[in-house]
Length: 553
Image (cartoon, rainbow, N blue to C red; front, side):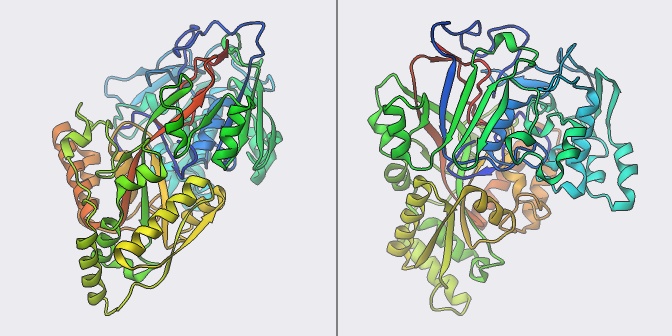
């Protein structure tokens, strides 16, 4: 259940790997040159990425690496520009919206095709949306498509009801070039959301032929975007080449993009220093090394990092004082300074700074600091009280899980040391490959887990509705609080924006008081970028980077 979504991050729940774009029928919407690179310079862009994307299937995608690659090889009706505004992409113009805000009529461009040259039709969007909402697909982001009339009903349909629910869904291909979408109720930012990979089209015969292997390898992927996936050596490298069938191919200057999967930050930086890559994320002390250099580029994100506490798997976590103690026992400023090199911002709540409150004001300015401050003495007292209430003398040993990147490993080590020093609690660290970490998280198979969430739109709801008791897609810690549910669901329906903002503030305050998760920091990510790379967008939400307008000078 959601309400307003001004795109993005999406997105999915990623860890220290990746977390809008821009599109138009003119040639200079991205802030780059648009009209192209130097003909004497090879138009090849080389990037390091810390995590490999799981399957490149827009129905089941939840992670930033996946959204990032999908955004390069496929496209939606709209693409976000450098200012985060939707511009016509596969659609020839912005939608015609009915007076009641419910019906969107969208016309496709003339002659748009898939990368294999076959026509792309309005029905390819209809197919994709129905596939995502089909309960058998088990799509985590089906909640966004549930904004469409009949979407929630389809997503809960029993097998015998499926075809009738699909027929009743408010998505109709009027003809090959006209798509009509009817919403269950007005969603002011819906045009923005149509740029998100969850709303991308899918080629029905190709998807059907690939079956459960769809999106798993380079030859099992097809799109209609600026690039084509030419090679995918898993856990090593992805290679994309220009899609000459793309409707705006004349304004795509890159001929080749190589994405290396590199988890070790020292290796990654060495590749930049030895001119093997043009863009790489900087980790820890590397950020300070690039201060004042023209290669330093900052990516300001709507991303929060936090520790989730699985209170059903670890019964001790059901005690609020134990949870509070674990949160108060982490020095967030020291974590930012020691592990992240000072590049990010210690958290003061769950919703990052600069995210709007839905009422034209920054949420953090309205809410203030809702997260308890670091206090080792108070934390130790709370832990003792909580253990006494549980009839325990010590907190049972548990695992703290994260990714196997260097930053993730250092974060685990830092928190282990903090809990040992400040609380006397011993914790086992567990570093897993990104895909396995995500799988275990989605299956509730963890004790405590460090995760990140990047916004799917510029509104606090994208951070708060995850923890509704009936959100089976993202409430991995199985938090359950009726008062919290009432606030968030009430805000979802509230049309008075001031009242809605207050309800969301109250919801965050309640969440921070309950402490089912421990926010750590609001992420800002430093990159080293070659100075001859122009037109690159580093979006605040959902994706690592936008490549459509990049050129090499």
